Image (cartoon, rainbow, N blue to C red):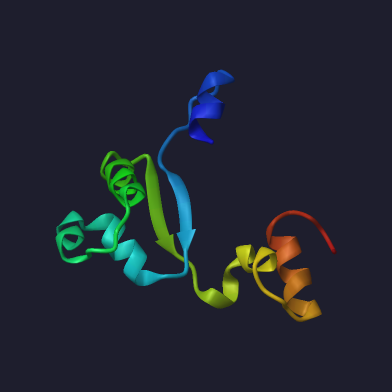
Length: 93
């Protein structure tokens, strides 16, 4: 997204927020020393580590109950669907 904005003539100021509900993933992204102990990491994690270090992406914790991306991956009750639609700026779904 940052590259697209840059190509369109907009320069993002500050890091892009990456909202994650997994504290272990945030820890691994922010602290490269943990990578040596995790054998299952794929090459994409090394890319993430680099952009976090360069402060282009800022991983932040979001509790699972407040994760609007769940609307795309889980079956939810109507009140949660409405809340997440509002959080994404879609109004009432």
